[in-house]
Image 1 (tube, rainbow, N blue to C red):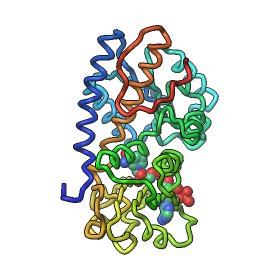
Image 2: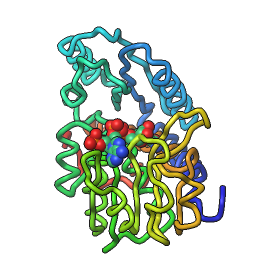
Image 3: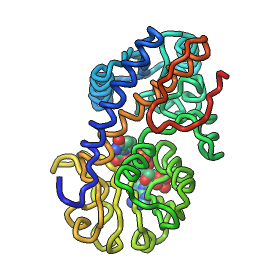
Length: 304
Ligand code: NAP
């Protein structure tokens, strides 16, 4: 790590320690072990590796996981039936759909079949709606990781020009309401943006989430900007971000390295949401817990 780095690895460790003690306390109070259900369709090798690492991380903080593996040929109708079973299964508190989904399964239709109380990825239309309404329940994990990292390093956002490169449902779009809630002025760029450099050069805070290796070069960054690189791109030179780190470093005031920036924090956000889901579901059964998971929004959930 270098001087200007926003160290996500260190923050992730700190959050994991907090989560471990919260989960231990919750288990003692309720005799319930929080459990995450991971739904996965197909045989994609990189997805399998992500799943293994997520399960390992969950285990380390005392959370159970169960993998529900279906064929890539499963129909949307049958997937909905399977999700209905998981929605009704009391021992499962959170459900995530591991990407990529088979091409014939539209993500938003699939995720809309997950009970919003168990949608720990925060991508159910109801949860996205609450987020855009300014009263979030489950917040999508990568944007929340970005906000958590900026908060940890006390990066001021009020009145700042925030430029987000990328408008995906899971990263770029949810960042808009989160940044607006912090009183930033938000611009979102995408592949049809006419002059990307014009926008990025104006950014006090630049968030790159395009999935294009080294798309953002040094000359596209304003002197003194805070640069958050969400990109994870596998290249011949190893894993690199969307920002050319070496070029960006001298111009940026703070910058996330890749790997070691946003990435390590994201799994902790899923764990945090699953703990919240467990607390709310336990409360609905009359089992009160004093655990209020760190940094959680004040929405009361759908079960009350
Ligand atoms: P995605 O669904 O492919 O979306 C990419 C977005 O970037 C799209 O909105 C696209 O615009 C835009 N874009 C692509 N090329 C561009 C260009 N040349 N100029 C301007 N905009 C461009 O990807 P995603 O799921 O959001 O993921 C983005 C990156 O973050 C990937 O590298 C992914 O691996 C990484 N990621 C990291 C984490 C983490 O934990 N750190 C988590 C999730 C994702 P259009 O809408 O016009 O196509």
